[in-house]
Image: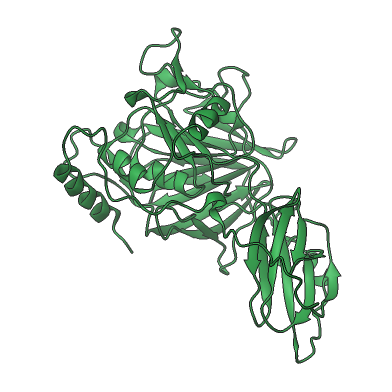
Length: 431
């Protein structure tokens, strides 16, 4: 396991060595992520030999694998393959698409094909959005339909003077993690829609950059810690930072600074696309796999209370049967949007335990959250039930992996997701 402290210390040395008039520390940049974050290979344009493909069972365009549907295992009989054929389980996630195998239309489900190389592709409006090579000896092929929009992450503060925030109810994914002084901060990911007002916008920490890296997202922030700047640039993240004169943020007079900065995600996308090179190129779901219906846990999870050890700050979620959502309460009060008054209500709450420590000798007592090269316990709460699992994140720009105890990727119901990154041994009560 890579020590996050070691990485931070290494960056601190790099920052000291590079001190000078430049606006931010500049570690050697990583290679740019691929546009869409996936292989760009398309099915061969020449006509391949017609494979002997036998449909064993077909399903709706968004077929759910057996792990995500209690009835699918009995609905799909185990095929009997000839010695020169293998079974492929072709699965489509997170949306609708036309599916091809070796350039020919097929329906998601279980198929018998000739043994040998095969390539599956998902197409939306005629464009290839996902490609996967089939295992030579058969097995599963997962095609993930990317989000409608490129990833955009907004840093949002959570001090008392910043509450209530605006725009969190319109985000697809929100992460909450500790900043310095026992105060949490949010990073909100907008993947499928935009919000005209989001904020208050605040500064970036390096572990929030790692979380945005799950989605290949560009980030909007105002200032950053030294490690935040260094990792943002090492990861080649597109960004808008008011501190250095970037556009996208305006300030209101109804709140005192620095708690009065807001942004518009649609305008931010335009500013990022106008940069050289153009940004807003990656459309990724990170660790999220959606299915309807999604698996349910065996344990009830209708009331959740969690804290961030050792601080007294508390968050509660209460399952609303009518909405099928978890109503969020913060410090004893409903957490509502400042403009609409709508209470924040995610469909899924994820509790991700991590090692959290103060950065040694940091004059502002900033924190380090061990995410990259790390792993730990995971609790997934949806539809009033609890499921347990584990998480790992191999590299800064690699998506975090959420697995159930059997090693299968965790599938969640459609809807907003809130991820609570809490220190190990933090108090959590689920009933």
